[in-house]
Image (cartoon, rainbow, N blue to C red; front, side, top):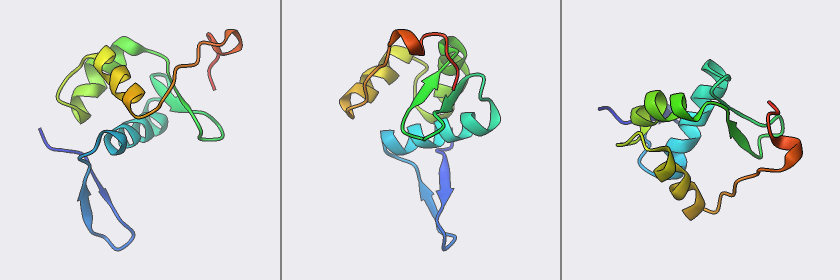
Length: 94
């Protein structure tokens, strides 16, 4: 499977080979093309995944070598991301 790429402002193609870069590209793609699955907050400081099963089965394999949502969350935790399960956030779409 081809790795996701991005173009810099000088037109050079870069391979997305780090977890944070792949995650950013995935979330940017979903925020623009399928915000019912995942989207960034309005201020861009966080993101939410609304449909974990579709996210894992359809989109994770496009950017990573697996479709395991738990592994994705563990990787996020390794990079310092935290989960927000605050009462006011449950069921709320940004």
